[in-house]
Amino acid sequence: MSDWLRDALLKEQNERVAIKAERLRKATPEPPKKEEPSYNPNLKDCEVCGKQMAKGARTCPHCGKTYTTSGGIFLAILIGLAIGGCFMARR
Ligand SMILES: [Zn+2]
Image (cartoon, rainbow, N blue to C red; front, side):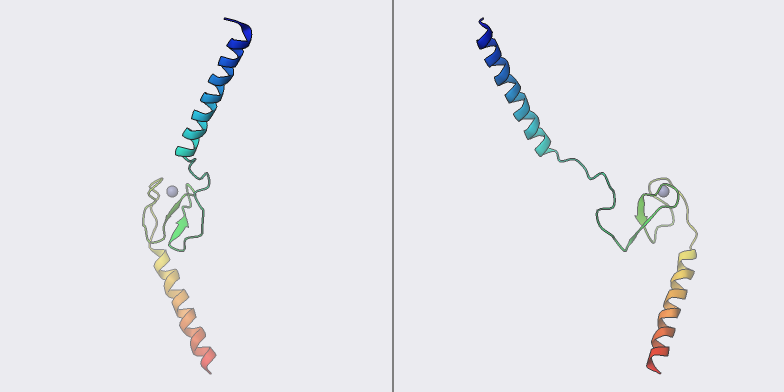
């Protein structure tokens, strides 16, 4: 086999591999590295692992951290403030 033919064959093979790799890469898109593509009001960051979990969840689905229901009290205060604010604004 002459050198130029071998080179040509190698080149063609490399190109085919590159095309195959490119197709494979397009077929399987990389998962987003950041797990926070957009802000979701129903999600919050876990205090322990930092991953997103449902606001209402009592345990983190990622690390198993348990949360007390102090969020309910916070929500009650917020609602109270909102109602109070409306009441004040009407006067
Ligand atoms: Zn967690």
